[in-house]
Image 1 (spheres, one colour):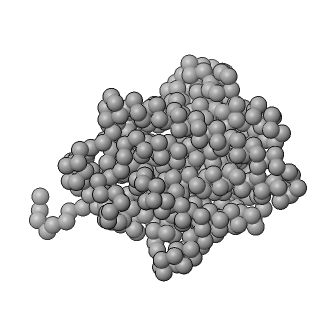
Image 2: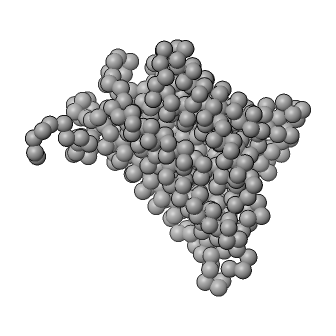
Image 3: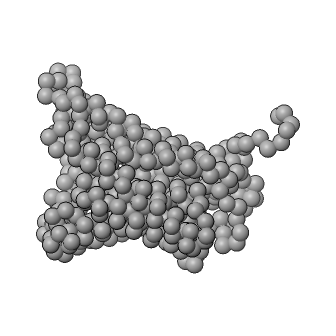
Length: 424
């Protein structure tokens, strides 16, 4: 292909692969946080989410988000790009090229990159549902959620839709939306979906009392380290080419993540007297989330400030579930949701050229707030309909006896660890 940029093509293939790493990274991160009798199920929820999302994305999800004819700025026609037929062309027997920010690479690679991002978004939800849901109901939910929630929101924000930087909302409010790597579509959307499902299905048996804590924190720290690696691919890949913007996003992502980890640990030391491994893992994630919408749009100083704010604030908000009595098992709402909303709103203050601190006025903050609210409402309504319907048709919860025995035995028929010396 004569007009293809080989450097950008190679980089986007690598970035897409790194984003895929985020799904097993989340599985390990969450898997270490649950009780020993639930770890296999935690891993399987992520594997199942990846499998179902990939199939839905390849058959019609891509078309709804990016490939189909626009319908009302809300979604694309799922039939236009059904089975990716709008990506593969007869011309020269090659894939068509996509020109994003002047970086040319085969469009089929963008299918993979965006599909991996969708897979990551779904996987994030699993942390809130740990230790109590049916695997079969979860798999059905994933297919429906990607179709009716994630793909339309991706169209609205990323593909010149209703909420995009060049869309009618931004035009009406006088400033272009800034959401570089999915702070609204991925993180905020997933957190609201997690909260809605939790409110429908209820908490674990014994929630609010003393439940056993993480069974394998080294596993969670390994998952957090892989999240750092994969997230660098996500944020730099969102530059859509081997460019200076990608390099800048790499630096601000690293700065924010490390600042957040520091902010969380210092806050935890003041509150509880310890620097915990669990806090370090959560602090790292909070920083990665908060910088995602802002990676190329803020100065390095503000990236550090955003990370510190996220680490401190999320250290407090992840404990609100106990006073508000919703069982967000692994703090998807308290960490991902809060950090994502912070990232979207802090852009209104710190965005170079358009933020309040740069004399840009209130318009950037206003558009960030309005789009975030629309995403939250859309996610809550769509997720609520899907989750409530599945509750009535299939049921979400395992029985109390199954939950007590452990989700691994109840759902997978296996144990993660052999805890006796007997051969079986």
